[in-house]
Image (cartoon, rainbow, N blue to C red; front, top):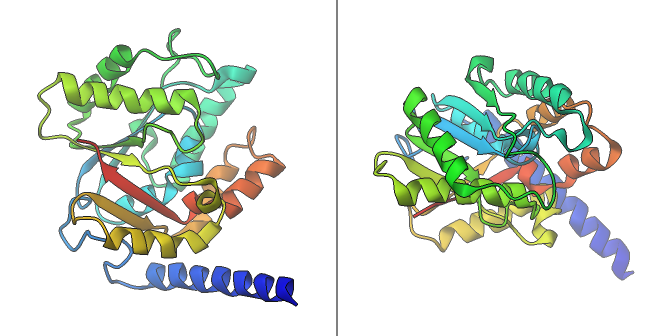
Length: 260
């Protein structure tokens, strides 16, 4: 009798979590973001999302992108590689442009690099000084005042995700861009990572124990848009990634922490 009770409990939690997200998407309130009231730090900003590969934006950052686009932010994406580990870099680059349309990021504000020293692959370390230089140039050229990227684990532990984080941190250490805020996407445990929308309750609880202005948790107001964006990456849209996007907590909530 224990297993049926566990299954029913999980189903109820899943449905309740989806209902919570749906309620927020239909509500005009500011509850979709914790610790960020009207006029908060994520409103009306020039935002640069820095990622490592095409599809990172759709697999991990859609709650953030959806929230920011609905709050008057001007969104830019800087992708440090074409994701050419399997020789499909040109295809994946075009897929990112298509996904950006779904995510309401102007295509002209999406930049995909193909630098010889920034090629996709496990074990291929990227130089933080080079990354910092590239990010700084983009900040200056696009008048960026808010940068968002991975944290030092990089959600999946991919070395390129971690390198991008180090590039942003290097920029903050070496420059006087005090007017630029930088935030990192918090990596969670594997249990939370695959808990789907249920993780929003843990995120709500976690946010209550942190000082305002240090951590913000954003609910995805348009979760179906996440699926639609990831579906544009047809070369990557295989069965296990379909499962990932469906069951990943990063489809439903992003928790961001300020990089000091």
